[in-house]
Length: 162
Image (cartoon, rainbow, N blue to C red; front, side, top):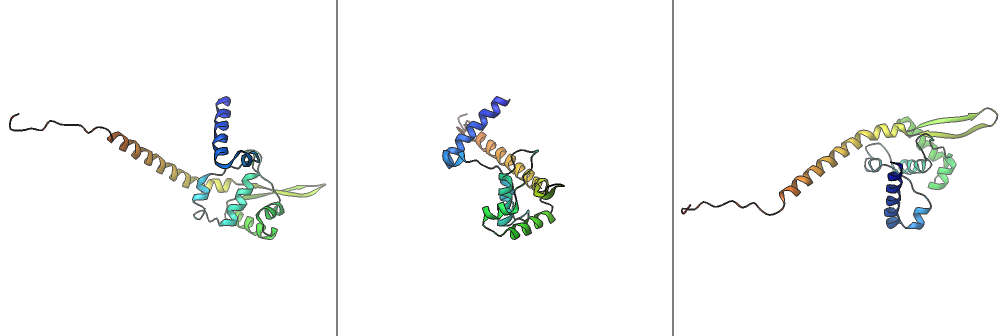
């Protein structure tokens, strides 16, 4: 299974290299479910929120290691004031889409917050299930239409001679 997964990953990378170029893909890439982009308005996300989420996703390397970039890192990358980033993150948290986890070390002090995106995942899941059902139905219709194609079935025509 692991070998198949690595093979699929290599094939996908090549496909993405064809789209984006080998040079761009070599600098890294980020995965974010399409449904979050498609349903951003329904999720209550504006363009800045999406940009913040894209950056958080960029720093989220594995399921058990949540992202923890600083607000100033996000602000610099997006081109906004750190206070603007802070307000948007607070709004995302108030909406239950993200959760900030403070990291305080007694002898050192505060470190960057950890961001838990499980609220966003929970809120987006119904839209994903709805979209998945639409795709299943669309595929069924496509198969049904494909089954109808081909040579027409000829039936003998009854005439007076028969």
